Amino acid sequence: MLTCDAYLTPRTLEDAFAAMGEHAGQYRLVAGATDILPWAREGRAGDVHVPVLIDLTRIPDLHERRVESGRVRLGAATPIQRFLDDEMLVTALPCMPRCAVWFADDQIRESATIGGNLVNASPAADGMPPLIAHDAAVELASRRKGKVERRTVSLADFVTGPSRTLITADEIMVAIECDALPGYGGSFEKVGHRRSLVISTVCLATLVKLDARKRRIEDVRLAIAGIGPVPRRLSDVESFLRGGEMTAERIERAAEMPVNLVQSRTRQAYRREVVRGFVIRGLVNAAARAGADLNHITPELEASYA
Ligand SMILES: Cc1cc2nc3c(=O)[nH]c(=O)nc-3n(C[C@H](O)[C@H](O)[C@H](O)COP(=O)(O)OP(=O)(O)OC[C@H]3O[C@@H](n4cnc5c(N)ncnc54)[C@H](O)[C@@H]3O)c2cc1C
Image (cartoon, rainbow, N blue to C red; front, side):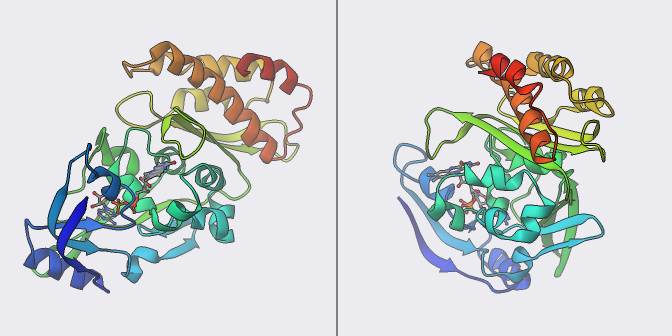
């Protein structure tokens, strides 16, 4: 069980930093608490007493949501559920609704925040691949010499290993900024140990933009988690596919390319098979949502990822 002596709910970044300064070495930041609470359960970290919990979810800066000049600005305390019900986000981030729909359940999605997911940095955190595919950067704030300072780090660099990131103990993740990609088709493929409330073993985000005839791939982005210590873009696969047509042969060749990137020591052969199948399925699903007519190739491809 998680216990504390004080539960603080600052209403501004300044107040949060004041609380962090006053209780230095004694506090823990919290947003939806959907990672912290299970962690503090007996059998994980054991019973945990934190003198001061500082809840960041009442700070307006962490709830900003807007699209400007082709970039989305997303407050770190945005609940995962907003990726399903905020039309602006659904349009700008086409694979996030697919990611969110398989994320926990309705109740947890209302509490769990995107910032908490990124800071927790589980090896297969579902929020990572879609945002890396959107070229996301995270904004981190701290208070130095009495002034709030901010730095921006690309999300791909932010994660340095399983549950390890570049955030320091005195920093708050304020926002995430990433490319708005309206008109792209998005998909999110995920597999885990059970059917519902599942934490991913491997997950893949795919974004496809087609030309006006809906045949040639104008742009494609793929990012994967669960095959190595950190999530990553599949840049070689993207370069191979970009500019070409959606043929069964090209999709199958693309799917073979990342198979040897699997570094995880557990269930290697299985993960390789999953990667191959996910790339095929991700491309087919994303291209179909971008308007491609794939009737001629899907039966052939379905056989190779069934
Ligand atoms: C039943 C269940 C199902 C789940 N299913 C999924 C799933 O399908 N996919 C998935 O990826 N995850 C899943 N999770 C894990 C969890 O819900 C997510 O990782 C969630 O996004 C964490 O966000 P949070 O706001 O609850 O984080 P919290 O638990 O509040 O915090 C997590 C960590 O981040 C830090 N933190 C949070 N916000 C900030 C901030 N703004 N600045 C600095 N530090 C911060 C906290 O100090 C803490 O260390 C599941 C959890 C449960 C209990």
